[in-house]
Each structure stands twice: as structure tokens, then as C-alpha cells.
Length: 52
Image (cartoon, rainbow, N blue to C red; front, side, top):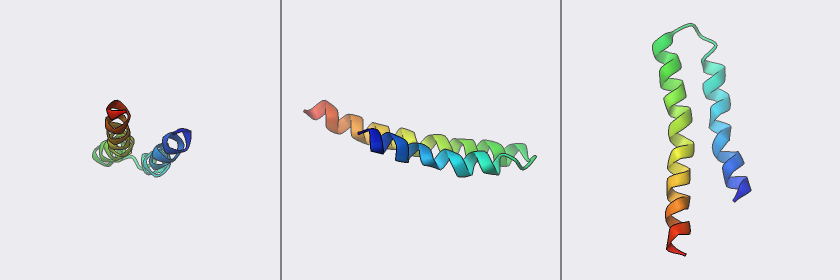
């Protein structure tokens, strides 16, 4: 479970790196991408945990 948490946060690294560019719209897209991946992972894991 801890490994899944760590790997799901890896997508923030490219998102934060892309936020160096001074383009507001691109920064928002990168942050939304960085947020969507871990949230979708947690929702799927939470659904399987709730069944047990």
C-alpha cells in the first residue's frame, strides 16, 4: 500500500517541473494532471478496500 502511494505521487515531478514555464494555462493543466492520477489511483484502491 505504501508503494502505491509513493508511485502515485511520482507524476507530480514532471508536473512541477513543467510549472517552471511562465504560462498560466499550462501550469494549471500540469497541476490538474498531477492531481488526477493519484486521485484516480486512490479511488480505485479505496473501492477494493471497502469491499473487504
